Image (tube, one colour):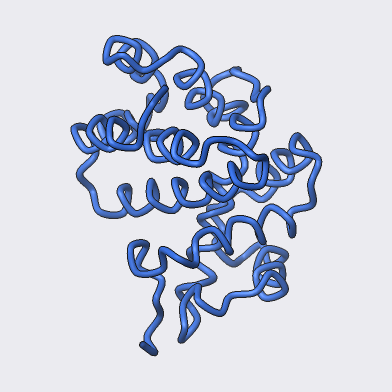
Length: 188
């Protein structure tokens, strides 16, 4: 099973851009919260979340085309590689998310982008962000416009939950790590 230590080692060997590392951390902490929600192994889900954009920095136009072979050769189990590949469903491949882990990764990849943008606007960052405030921003298509809301809704449908529920799980799961994900806000 993929450990957080191994995922960090692999990801850090390929990813050096600060914004991509920050995104990986956001997804990692959100995946930990989703694992808790589904009663699954938190560290394992966090490891998959941290490693999900393994090839993006070097191959942004061929994202996930340089992941499977490389990760399998590095000893990552096939089911974990499949989970990573599934977050590109409908965007850069046809690997349909099937498990709760895969569906969660597919959803939180975009969802954390809006959470991050929303929290950055607040004096207390993510520390006092509530779902109600998030949903107002989610409905505003001009806010964090690059985040694909239809993809988030599709993922939530796969998970059988409302966007507000997925957002609540992720926000609460990310709050304890506000400093690490640079979301403490300006009032400290």
